[in-house]
Structures are given as C-alpha cells and as structure tokens.
Length: 79
Image (tube, rainbow, N blue to C red; front, side, top):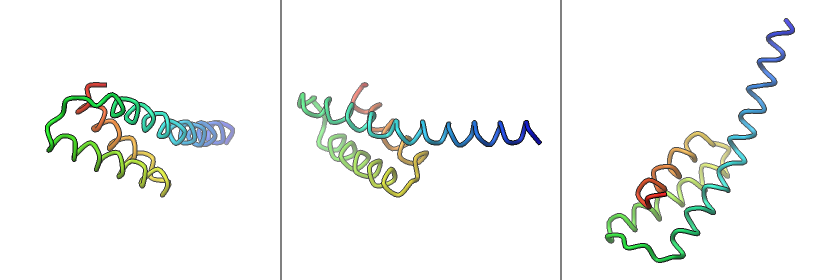
C-alpha cells in the first residue's frame, strides 16, 4: 500500500512539473520569434498555430498535448 501511495505522489508531482514547463517553452518560442527568424510563410504560420494551440492546451490542463505542439514549433524554429 505504501508503494502505491509513493507512486501516486510521484505521478502527481511529475504532472505538476510537466505543467510548469509549458510557459518556459512558450517563452523560448516567443524569444526566438522576436529575433525575426528567416522562415517561409508556411512555416511561420505553422509555428504561430502550434504556439497558440500549445497555450490553449496548457490553459485547458492538457499539458501533454501542449508540450507536443510547443516542441514541434521549437523544432521548426531550430531550438
């Protein structure tokens, strides 16, 4: 029983850590975008869409989806 409680606490803490990382990733994307990177219109639009989607998922508590979108945007930006 004790192991189950420890495992549950670990999962809860991991979720909280994951959630708090979303804003860090959004700031990294915003910082890169502020440097006006050379992107095609298609990639610029895709990054903007992924950034918005990541923020929306974060606000909805869907942190795994948020991180997926934000990491894809970072990949396009080369960060």
